[in-house]
Length: 145
Image (tube, rainbow, N blue to C red; front, side, top):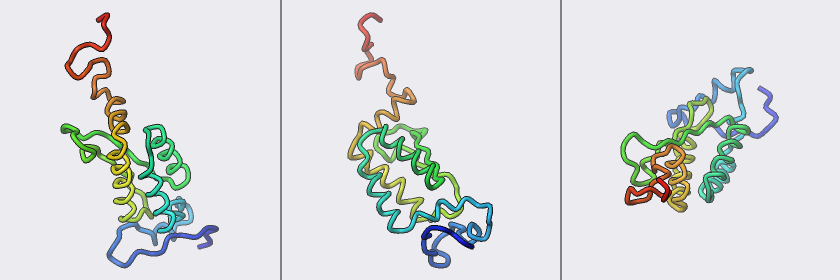
């Protein structure tokens, strides 16, 4: 087990289901996630909390996938979205991803969305849930229609 970078400390027994040991034992495994030490996780969470636009969020998702192999999916729930709790923010199942990290990343994204509601509106608009061509009263935003 020769890893060229500092790795995350082991979680207390029974406190996590990250399968860190299995990841370390498999020489073909993608070990990038182990670079996310507790100190690096704090930096990542802080950075996620300070995101102000959907473009920044998308860039962070791409960087997290490229550097750590973390895949995040953000979708509106099947029910009505009234708050940021109405979004499903899921991290793909990945060996080595700590339970605390699985909770911290979505929570940081939600806090960012609460501070900058435009992010949530843009996500909804991407899925055409706001009906891009209508105003709040159901009237056409385009006077020619």
